[in-house]
Image (cartoon, rainbow, N blue to C red; front, side):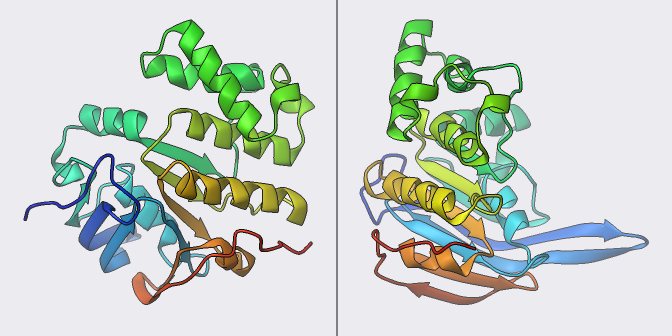
Length: 251
């Protein structure tokens, strides 16, 4: 199969095409099939919501698409890579570093580092000079509204600010694909709204393929596409017109 995915795709070009993904986990003496032959694609410039109840397979799907969890069956064509899972583990790690951004509900920040250091550290791993890494990190933190908080450590930041540091860290790499796993679950309505608007902007202005796993139905208004997964299968897949001015009501 020849992949049609593109690294620097225009809006609407495929960034990921996955076919027939199967993932099983051992449970006692038997296996539980968490992904049951899932086909999935995502496009540059789209914010794709993957929704479903807890245990539906949505986080496992993200992990299989991003090179974090090897599926038993199926293939993932992504950007200029034909079948990601045929690469060596080291090359998969490098692919993630160079092309993917990740935002998790737990923030995953280093307690001893300032907001600025959290972002520059990742960029130095990519090979940027210290001066270039610092400039790009400041730019990313200013984009998420944290210009005045550059030198604060996580203990001095609110939950919403911590999540914005995590988003700045992901956006600073200018990723072609941005994975977000329950990015608003720990946040109130106001901070959740800031986060979802930043994800929307990553798709619209940065041209990233943004894939957001959530069980929060309030986020659907911002999506170009909403995919519902249940019991390891996609049961619904709808494109829609996003509303970038939607309001996230308080819990």
